[in-house]
Amino acid sequence: MSEQAAAAASASGSSSPSVLAALVAGLRGGSIEVVDLTAPLSSSTPVLELPPEFGQTATFALEEISRYDDRGPAWYWNNFRSGEHTGTHFDAPNHWVTGKDLGDVAAVPAHRLVAPAVVLDFSDEAAKDPDFLIEVEHVQAWQDRHGALPDGGWLLLRTGWSNRSHAQEPFLNADESGPHTPGLSAECARWVAEETPVAGLGVETVGTDAGRAHSFEPAFPCHSYLMGSGKYGLTQLQNLAELPPTGAVVIAGPLPIVSGSGAPARVLSLVERAGEAS
Image 1 (cartoon, rainbow, N blue to C red):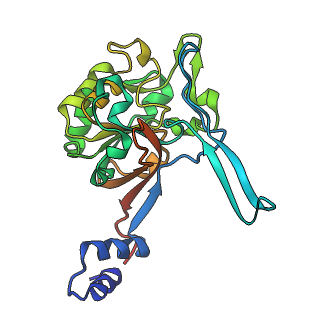
Image 2: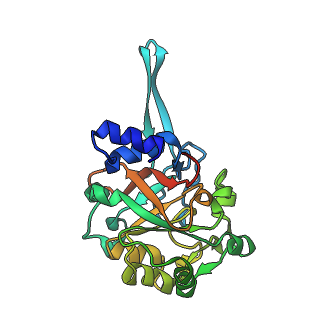
Image 3: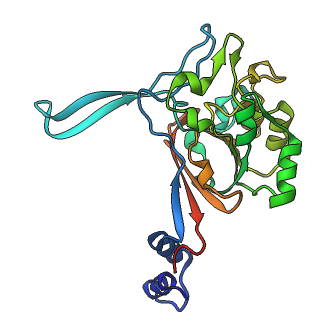
């Protein structure tokens, strides 16, 4: 028994550690690493841009209430303004018309916010072609190597796109024909939503759909199929390169906004680092 496990067993009064005591021991001892998948949220955080005839999301903004001054001599605090779908955020089923009668972000069961995750790496393909589309065959080939997708877990797509998240223009990568970012094909989106056991899809891009998904059939198929199936989305993730293909656990913490269609979220991952602690 390792020193961490022995300490956990002693703390629990048992000859073997409880699951939670072993988790705490692993976190303290370094055998379990917490990886932050969240992009810092500020006024420079990139946001989705829709055609001008549609309503637009707000960029993140702070409004200072007081800062150790006459407005409040001993405290500093702010109001903030933000779109629900700004920065690293969680998409609830009611975000899309196909899920309009399904749950809001406050209704997501807490136990579904902690789930296993797999990471599919298409960063090389996206570097060569920003419009790269992931097909069903790509996911099936990954399953042949690594096993089935996790029941109730997250399918995370690593594309390297978070390297562009420092500024709006390279992140959206738009020209006169629209944005160019990688994502799922329409058929793959339908397949993931309707024929796999995952709870949701996580991406590094500004939204769960590929940049040119406005011209797919249906338009924006990840939103259409995932939300309509009662599944979730996580967007603008970072540090996916630090996760293994399988074995990580994701903790997604959106604000529980009553009637909200989504919310900014702090998204963490627990990763077991074998051999890094005794």
